[in-house]
Image (cartoon, rainbow, N blue to C red; front, side):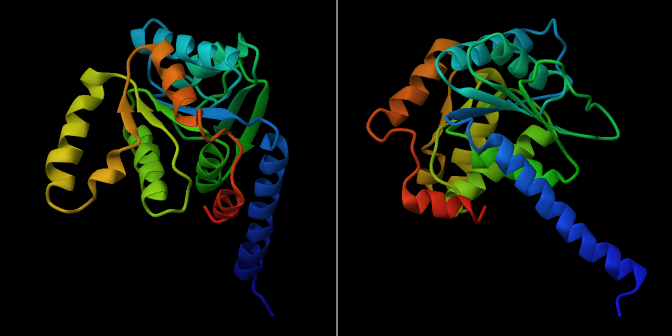
Length: 227
């Protein structure tokens, strides 16, 4: 017989399953989509906020749903830009002890209890990743995306870093230290681009899919089940 602690753990598995099913049902029609990452601490008056809003609006008007973390800062700017456009603005919200509060610019809003489930949804439906300047959370999401692609657990899609001054040092380190010492292969960085101009970001995404289309192949659909 299960004790109370073991019983709670068993029921928790069903809670995870229910969260996954609910999110999948809400998001299955939003593709093509672009996930935008960035700091929750960016002020509304900051250039990065305004740049993110413009990028998201262009992506939305170009036919991409825009996915953000649903909170303040860069997340709010992404949702705000998409909300004003013609495609859905999606917020994947989560409660945190600090910083996170839901913004009001979401056509589709999903609340997550589990961080890992939220991160899966960022990846599962994205046709590209746009990464604005951010802190540890943004770095975590960026490195996880690179790792999933490197290991073949996720399909290869564009990863666009916005802010050459912010990301340039990291890219230099990845190439000159990580790759140079054999910790990664040069091809692992091939899909990462540094682009600052909003119009060029949209163009780069369309250019990548020009000959392959946005529809997942059967093999890619199968791989997405095992993120």
